[in-house]
Image 1: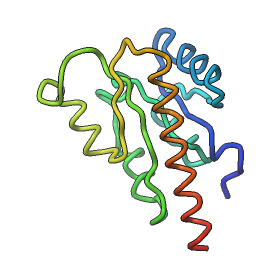
Image 2: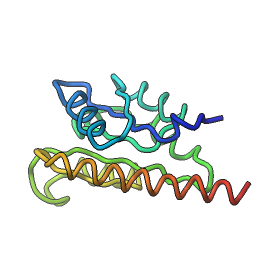
Image 3: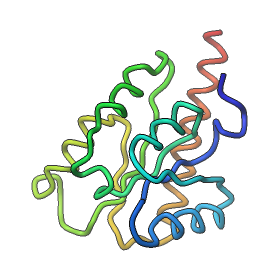
Length: 144
């Protein structure tokens, strides 16, 4: 069973540089709790333990094996549509970014945020993702 506090936490996958620290600080300033994963397997482990949404930097999954993440998504209950925010590099639309297309097709419920971004943009997307996740939890409660 997923505990209440972890059900609303953001899990951040940004293993290089200061991206994770910046994302955690930005979310905290917006009143949101988060934790960081060092790699893709740890991300999936934390998502399975319970999370509200995930923030992923595109390059952290660019050449990674997404099968465990796909399995997590396939294992979701019918009420669940787990939300992802993917931080992308500057560089144009989907036609110029095959990785973004792959992530869109793989993750499903994904929002892209191009870097550099204004902190308000990340907090706004994060709150929207969490609000959507809370509605999913309400649907689960009705189904039960």
